[in-house]
Length: 192
Image 1: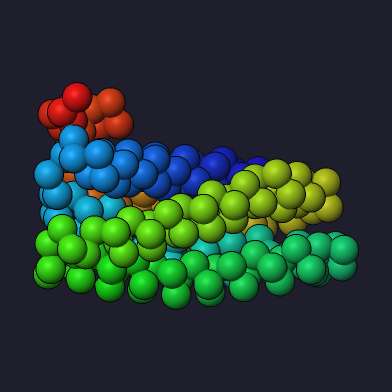
Image 2 (image 1 turned 180 degrees about the vertical axis):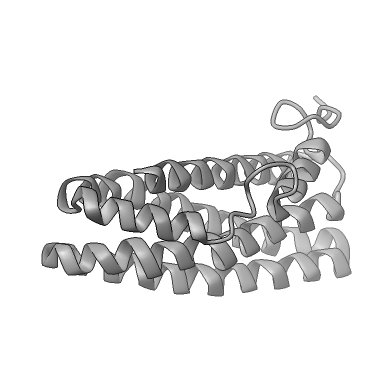
């Protein structure tokens, strides 16, 4: 079940960026940080591109499709998660627009940006939790060893931009870690 390890790793990486984004927005709200639009843009790029170009397509095409065939009881849950993948993409577009607006108008755009971030975080944490606590346990029991072997092969054949130093998103993740203030990253700590 290498697929489950890959999904867990991608969820962890996304979760780290989400936690860092929440921290930065809270610190901005408390005037403990000055806006770093390069950092915010990198975070928004990561949470937009990673799930949309790599993570969700693998789940939809390989795991969800095979689980739907194997377990008709999973159909409603899978339909919900697929819809959330579409809704999540729409939310990232809204997030990108809110960041552009915030950068364009300055402090006057922060409240709207922070509100969009809060909605996105709530939505995404709920989605990740559902996959981790409902979908993956169901997949573990419903899919056969042959199913997992096929899914693992399909995931292995699918480009993994998170893998290694040369991974497309590894560099972006590294940049986020280096720019994010401590304790969530390696950047200078926020003012107290």
